[in-house]
Length: 362
Image (cartoon, rainbow, N blue to C red; front, side, top):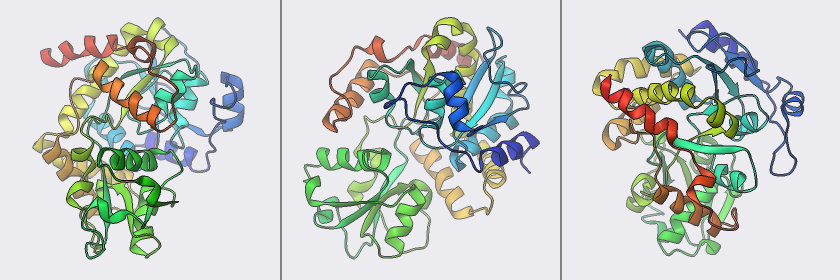
């Protein structure tokens, strides 16, 4: 059973509303909290620390997380395994709804860092002036795939002229499909993209015949719906240079709480290392069972198998200049960034670099 803090956090986020996008209107902390109506946020407490919103001390780090299933599983594993306690991190967990929720909260001054995020507009928003910096990597390999009826789609080239279910325009699913087509020399203008909503909704659109293919989570790899992944539709292989989930932190935290961020990064490095070990299987499945209202063993095993076979995480959370250069070129090509910026204008790897030796010693 999930601990009390997680049940309270899930309840608090159930009817959450997303804050306004700082791309269109600057956010300060007060306006963010008012717009989020808490206000779109829920506090998760336990070993993560006593509940609070304000930056009350020089050592406490407020971690932002989206309450989706995959993140919920990681949060519960972190709680159970006690990595934050082990490395002496003083933290509070705050849950923020929506793909942009954690980023918006950090921009609004509500938190310090988000360690696990598939939000793909981070670089774009930093380039537009958001006081945030990339602080490291979460999941490096892309845990998405193209699913289709195998009798209709044998390769990505077969998608020309067909309907592909993704999410919002330039959102993660759509952006990665465009990049995939670009690298495979496929004319994306001949593909009909439809916004089906979430990962799961995109998958369901193909099951129901509303689309002929989709971009969706690897959690569907074991589904018995008759869909298959074309050989060139495995994004973890087709887009090896794309860092799927980044960690990002407020510029203020990186300036004023640098030392306090180090044990937090070490704890997440230890968590990612643990996730890829065979002995973590029972704990992983138990955490996912607690996080999912109606437990789906097939999807849980698909994620577990992916973690073991593909080893998408790394103890070293650092992102290289080459990694960010690839991301920037991708988003410039999508029209989401105007020009390539220096590494130091986008990222600060000091806490991640300092955390790695702690893992080696542990």
